[in-house]
Image (spheres, rainbow, N blue to C red):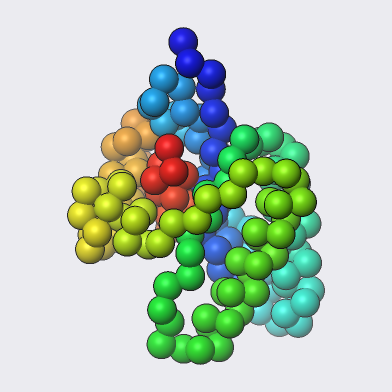
Amino acid sequence: MKKKRRILGIDPGTAIVGFGVIDVCDGDPVFVDCGCIRTDSKLPMPARLDLIARDLRKIIREYQPDEVAVEELFFFRNITTAISVGQARGVILQTAQAANLLIHEYTPLQVKQAVTGYGKADKKQVQEMVKTILKLGTVPKPDDAADALAVAICHS
């Protein structure tokens, strides 16, 4: 039997950061857990970024991943959204680096291609495939957690 690898997938955001944890045993991804880090939009951005970093450190301590897979920023029509998500990604990458984790980054196209076999799959198709691949009874909720699991599966 091969060594088990634990992967933490992350779907970055400012209001919601999705996370998904899988183990890979003999090439097969196995669901461990998923969830979200939520920040209050009333908080100033530095406080929100600090909250993301603190909660991500707790998640890393709890699940002890070997590697982290993070979705790359894709084009946003709203530049303000792109900047804030970029700031959140920076905090996520720095927190993973500080924990001495191997970091891998994937575009949304790469994630969709890996999970569904089709780079232009819609959100629902990706979520259904996450459910199928991980042999879950239902699609993981919220969407951000399912997206993070898709990133982890992509890396696996």
